Length: 273
Image (cartoon, rainbow, N blue to C red; front, side, top):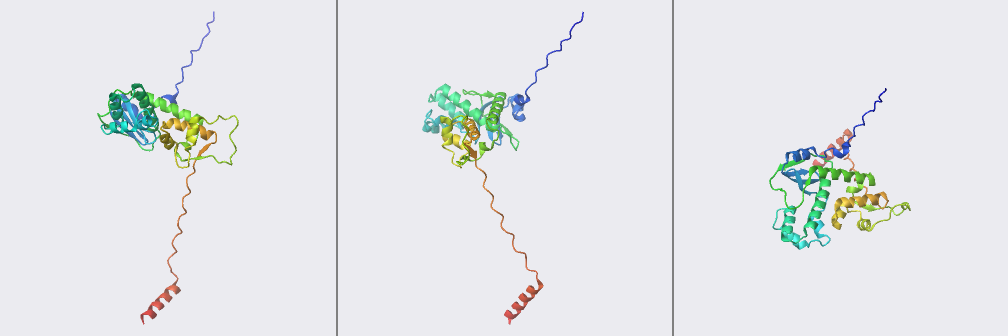
């Protein structure tokens, strides 16, 4: 009797892009359950016991903007709380303790701001990060996230933007309206949504995508999604950098003609008479 040899099923292939660490230093700090502040080129992450409790980036609107832009919280209420605390995270906690914000709304807004700023903080960097051990960050009433969850979400967002439009130039450059003389968008292209229209109305050749997000009081990443879709549809484009001024002409060479030098000496001698 012949027994057929059935080969074993192939081992699953792991997607390295979905599991690689965006910051080896951050991974090590998470494993150490470190507490402190990680400063990177495009943002800052606050760690408590190896978890991310807060994130900040100059490219992402802060928690104060997200809370006050649409009336969730009065601007004066945030300002008064901020005067009594040492940072946005403690300000939010004071507002929560004071009952000025619903718990669910604040927790959701805090996570939105954390993932938004964390996306930029974990962007590719030309300089190494710096970590300062500090006992100030702590696990508080607002939710924190594991490092692996922040990295996974950051990778997902990068992939989404690449699928919408692979050129990242529109993410950081000032935006301009598309050339009116250019061919119109395809009839099959998606119409401009109200959210995209709000972004399009603020394209003035000066504002960047993150500047528009701050003006609208929206998360920067969501605005990047709108900008990439508008770019793919041909509605906006990154403004080309200004041409550099031409270099000044070089100075004339010194006079070395012996005849001219002789004439100068004769002139000087005549003037001395």
